[in-house]
Image (cartoon, rainbow over all chains, first blue to last red; front, side, top):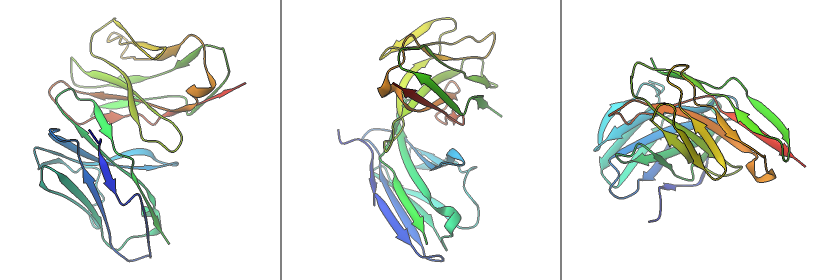
Length: 112
Length: 113
């Protein structure tokens, strides 16, 4: 069991560029979550999927952020026109019926 | 909506002293699951312990917590702090049958020699 896989581990973009972050959940887990973590804001919920269907995106900034889960083996978080305030560690987690969330190593996004 | 409150942003302790990190919650669920996650420097959060049984002590890796529904609390304790306990600790909850987890703001524990 490789755990939750996130790629890339680090990404640097220029202001206004697009960033796509990838997450591969643990095989057999039915729920996938995206979080953003900064020192100031802590751990912020963004969105989650269950059985590939979007369930709750209440934490997603509406205009530039989008997430998809085209199949059970991966999910993507896309940020269009990145801004410096988007700089953060983006964490993906997966979960099965035990409710315990297993976090990936995160993607550190730096927007210059 | 559901919420989790961790009143201390930073707790500093000397090695060997007892640890207590506070966690209270509000929820519409009558049978919530409560969790403590720990995040060491340059690592991701991982589950430390969990509970859904009222007034039952849960233990793991020297830490323990008891869910008290009467006071909506789930405080984390340890009898003697170790240097390796220095980390960020998140209290969290989820409702029965649901997957979404609500996290508190986190408490950073710093243990010094």
